[in-house]
Image 1 (tube, rainbow, N blue to C red):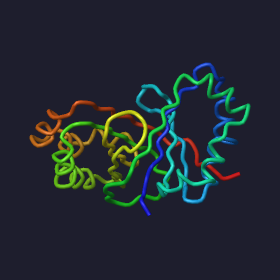
Image 2: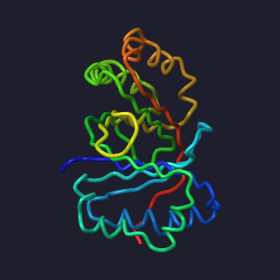
Image 3: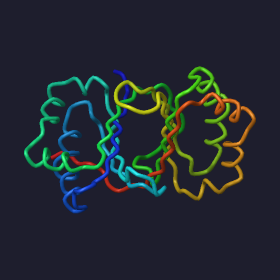
Image 4: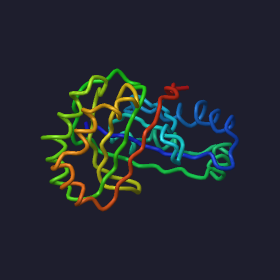
Length: 207
């Protein structure tokens, strides 16, 4: 089994908010978490003021995305076709897990996703040897998972953090973890970077 993450950013655009949530919560997400191999699904709203405003993420076995059940789930009903055609953004990405540290009873109150392209080997070494250990020293920094993008657009690597509260960003320990000389050297190799912060909205339920 290859552990993966289905990561979907969306922005309602011309879709009314009530219609957007009803479609996602009662049709779109339930169809996916009902597929064998897709173990969970969560929706989060942006806390950073940036767009897209919504994140849905699903923990899964990557093989599930090539299964007959998933093909059925992806067939769009007339309603879904209408909603999707009016969305301002539907950005779907698939990642393969490359490392995991810490523990978390999902859903975490806050998730931080940091997507990067750059010197992959040096980024990996920095994360494993310095950045992850420093962050996990913070009470409330529950879990960090690292991924490699295998489908979709965006930077090549993803660090996915599950934390207790955005107040952690104000702590001296966090400022230290994000301002070391090694971090500065690694970041000088980065050619693309996306950092987003989202707060928990709800958990998908199979229909």
